[in-house]
Image (cartoon, rainbow, N blue to C red; front, side):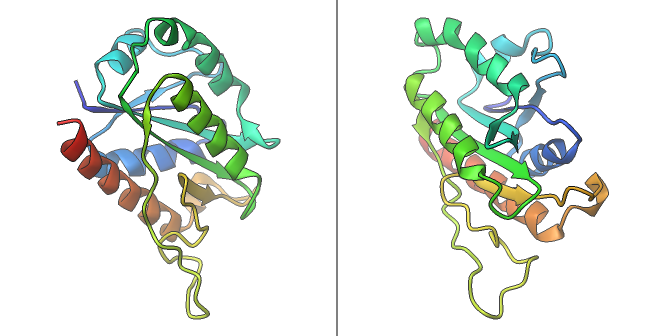
Length: 184
C-alpha cells in the first residue's frame, strides 16, 4: 500500500492529469472517483491504510464536483469511527480561469479534513509574481492553501500548461517529503 492516496474526480481529464503529475513525484496511489461518484472496489480500505489523503476535484460553479461531494458525504462512516484522525491531508483543483473560485474548492477540502481531524499540508511554494515571471513559472497561479491549476475551457488535456504540471510535480515532492518526515 502506498503511504499517500490521491482520491479525485476528473470530469474532462484535466484534473486526472494533475493527479498523475502529483503522483509521479510523490509515489501516491491514484484513487479515481467515477462518473457516478463512487470509489473503485477496495477504495475505502486504501484510504484507511494511507498516511496521507490528497483530495482533488475540478472547480465547477465555485465548488467541488457533485461526484466528489458524494464521496465526501460517504466519508461520514470513517468520520464517525475517527479513522482518518491525525492522517495528513492536502488538496488540489483545476478550473478554466485564473481564479475561478478555486479557493472555495480548496477550503471545502480543508474543512472536510478538519472534520476528520486531519493535519493539512499546503504547497509551501512562493508564487511567481514578479514582472519577469511567465505563465509557465512554478506556482504562477499563487496557491498557498493547496495546488491550483488552470485549463482554458477550450484546451485539451494535452494543452495544459507545462508550468502548472511542473507545479503539480513540485507539490507531489513536498507531499512525499512531509509524509516521510511526519508520518513515517
